[in-house]
Length: 248
Image 1 (cartoon, one colour):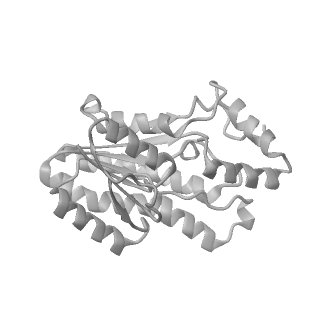
Image 2: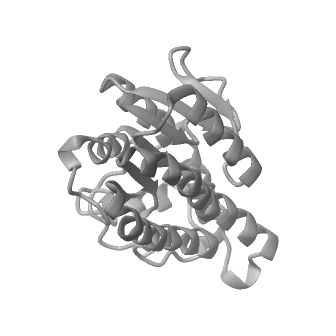
């Protein structure tokens, strides 16, 4: 199995790489920083929102591998935390560019490789913010909702070619990015970091944050033959979010 993961240099993407490698897959990750990538993985320094860079990447993948079995379109940034009237257009565009356009570009260039071989699986990383509204995170939420619309369309368009597409919606994932979100939300809402953290945890029926490996395990399943007829699905890995607004 040949697996390409965008934003695989750390966080969820890195955990996906580990999980696929343990399942026996060949792993290729891209990121702006690939210094932590193991020597037995392929890696490329790529801006996921740059079409020229993504086109060159997939040409390299075709040359090296001759095809692609699984695409994990995982690139994303948190974007600004602010009331909608305080969001600068440049910050909106930057967030949408990486989160939504990055997924589009990955799918655009992966599709011909998968069509040629008559098989493949695309796993797009959305978010529970793509299922619910997300106060003070308008650009991020809009981009993640957009990923679900993109995924549904890919599933319909590419299904006749033997290609599946699904979206994973992580909840609050432990790690540096979430710590940044917690800090910004605490400042915006006049709360402490721990109060915001507890709000997120209490907003799930499992009363827990998610670990990157939980998301990675779902990606491996969706990329495997065990999920051969699973397509067009939005699957949350979030401990069951009951209330998306941690302040309530």
